[in-house]
Image 1 (cartoon, protein in one colour):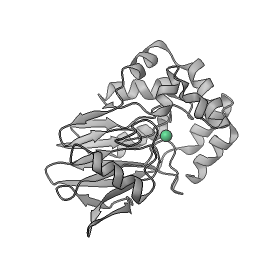
Image 2: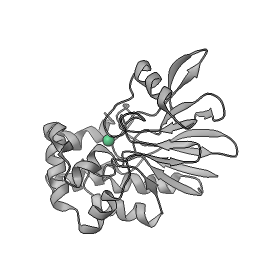
Image 3: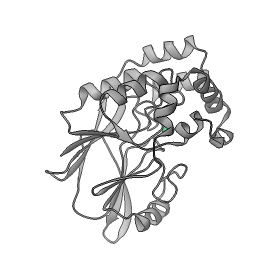
Length: 240
Ligand code: ZN
């Protein structure tokens, strides 16, 4: 089985469409939350994900969009964008977001937004946090997003190590338990402005990161038109 894994689409339709066009033929599409927030196309992104049959989990922005008090923890720009999102989204989007689970287990894979032990909020950014989460993982592989950084955390030479998921690189599935982060589709933060995603191939037993460019200018124009915060618009240019 081949699976496209996307995360942190953040209401960026041109980015999602570029990923769907660039990905090889797949049997399933999994998303790791933060489908909305920051970007200008929340309804359109969810319509697209529904059309392609994507399944996945709830992120902190998705929880805030359906009225959760997660919004209290947002920085001022994220909060402004979330207030806009709440006003903008329609009933079909709300229903779709409300139905997302916080954890989803599919075969050997556990899907979460943040981390296995704190699915909505924890950022896996350090060896210690990765180690603690690998210890509570109940399947061989954990798929997570939230940091917007493509990376794999796994035990190598008896210690947990992180390795950046550079475009075109793969890791073998079948060895040590791993936490795999596909990076972000709609708001990359690793200094590369192109959309990042992951392809799982359960027959070849590989997970491969890929990147694709999308029309950043179009999204920025749409964000400007609805007066989303300037800092959120500018960062897309640099992938930060
Ligand atoms: Zn996010």
